[in-house]
Image (cartoon, rainbow, N blue to C red; front, side, top):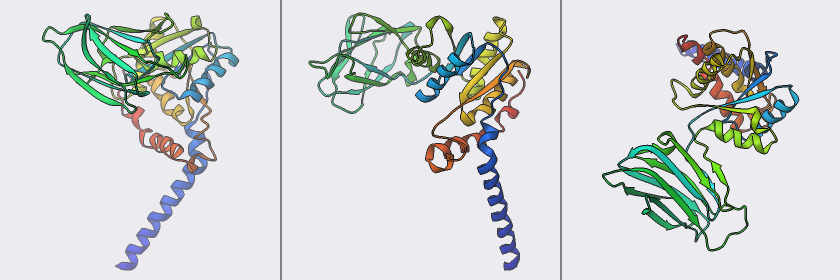
Length: 313
């Protein structure tokens, strides 16, 4: 009996070793697939890290594309603010209940959250992020403003505060508001970035992509997965605007699952291309040398069946 069990364990270990070797040799190139469609429109996922978005800008400039579309779901309410900046949020409908604000930054910076000229919360930043809560009046509020003031600043472009969280009844304000903007200390207005699509747009503008060549296609509601929801949002937009052929750019090993999701959402394999962008922390022959590489490969291995489990729209 013991000999039989040892034999089974040996077979199991041998199978696991073979599976690992196959993943080691062929997993990365299989997941990081690139199949251009030949179209002139490029779609990019706005959640990518800075290097990924920089790769997207290079691809747009060198790939002969005419237009860049950015997708992305609602992101956490997180902003770096300069002294004198004011964040103004419009809710559209009256909000009642409890506000929670998580804010940190340089010690000594003062902040105040107000609505209709009445202070709701106020305090001084003391380094790390601290959470503050307040109960809203029974009549509710339709807008609010967060103002940052610092007696001194380490530099004109150096943030003095970081807003890490902003919720109403535990709901991210980005998903509740009808609009927002930031009045900057120099008198200019900066739009908010409620989704990763807008955040990606800001990064791509800094990398030289012209503003009139970028279109934001945000995803406000997530169904099943973020990739699937973004694919549904863009393919609906593409169908409504006559976009027949395009390439989707995403990070490294995320490419195959993204490609399958977009083709499934479009209802066809024709005209949907995929570009796997270089991911310096998850490369073919070195991904197993760092935590990030293991995380990315493991995530794609586990999520690989996902597109096949989603019913055709």
